Length: 203
Image (tube, rainbow, N blue to C red; front, top):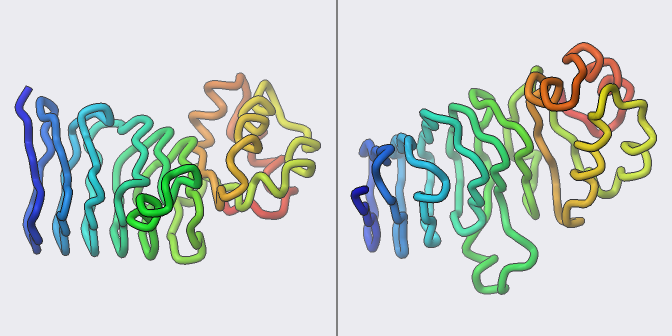
């Protein structure tokens, strides 16, 4: 393993590769502007210490699982690749000073595949989220009763039960229909049939 510390700098228009064998620290006091960031590292080995990523392309080259981006500020970034269990925005249980340093706005995920990815305390209208076969529940905790009452196929209701227990600040959750169908013993078509009957779902 090689430790990679990128901190105390403003870097513009460069390619930054976080390799599979790296333990990568981004920050503190780091701004990346107009950079291409290639991520091959696992979430466990990517430590975000309040970096600011502005107008960057973020290429995820192997599935990135369960990374919390709350301590990064992301603006105008474009994401590609597969991410599952990632969380973006501002975590409501952070200290106020920490929370103020995170966030997400004007980012484009339309070229990414997201599954069980949460967007918390942010304006989802500024984000481009991936379309079908990904789908997004907007404001899920406030739609709790409506979502739980829907006739979910297979065991997919378990996915919905988990989601509606998110913090009330959760603005959206995006899933991959193929991944949900595989986990819950149903089909993409059966999921779509239910999703099309609901308000607050972006396909």
